[in-house]
Image (cartoon, rainbow over all chains, first blue to last red):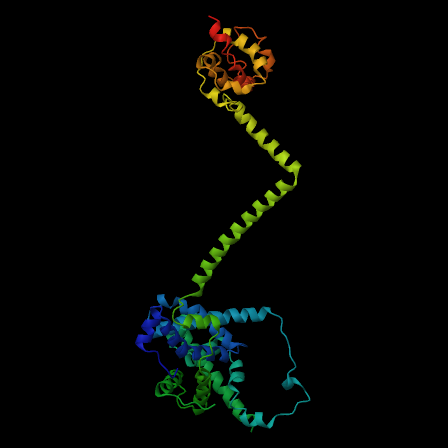
Length: 182
Length: 221
């Protein structure tokens, strides 16, 4: 997100030029990777690369400039995530030994100190699925309300409503979290 | 996770907070900045197929893969056909019964084909001299020639210098008639007015012998 795609790189990518492809990949793949990580995908890097292997040869037909390109890539990423969720729900769960689930476990001092840093995923996991998707697409993927509405196949008003409810729930969760340790 | 957002990102989060009426909530802003930090890692190292897309010179791997598959299909098909041919040849070479049954089957198949038309291709031409024989059936010439043929049988080589008029007597008309399974020895016994074509086919082998007849024929008139 820190690096923006220039117009020349965009036109090269839309013309099928590999130099444009690499610019698109280095610019947008961090956001796609963050989107999958925020949604709790196991192997977010592999899914990110799947998305770009799928998307890059199809960039020639993309319209709408920068926002159209971003919408297209995150549409594919969203569809991949839905597929991943379905596949994940059907596959049997392999359970490894989790030291955190062991009752003979005592809290780590480092975790208590650093707890606030890694807690975003667990906080997000407590949100409604659609609220979480809207917030992640709005903030991590850096998409507008209209773009998110197009990807989730909803109206912009519904997206604004989900965003507001998601922020309210997130604020409540953050307040609870702030009060619990102290 | 500390985030150092650019002005634009700061503006985005601010706009989102304003949309929902939480622009003053510092805790929520910090949470959203933490959320944004998910997208701040670098791009993942591309694996081989993605690297091929990003590298200049290779537009798509699918096209190459499809061409290679088509080529492989042609090669495999040619190899299968060649192996089947070799196998059939090996069986034919090793088994006498197989050869006989195949030739029998071929004869069975070709037999109805060869009998339906005039079937004038059944018997091979006995000698080159027969080819030049013009059709001029003469019943009178047949009788002595047949008797002479018995004596001339051990010397078929004499058929070559046969004069043209003798050959004209027996004729190519015989060669054109359908095959009748008569033994050559019955030829002299057949009555003179017998249709000239009736005994053509089995005598095809005797035609060179009949050409030795010229002696009596010129003397007859």
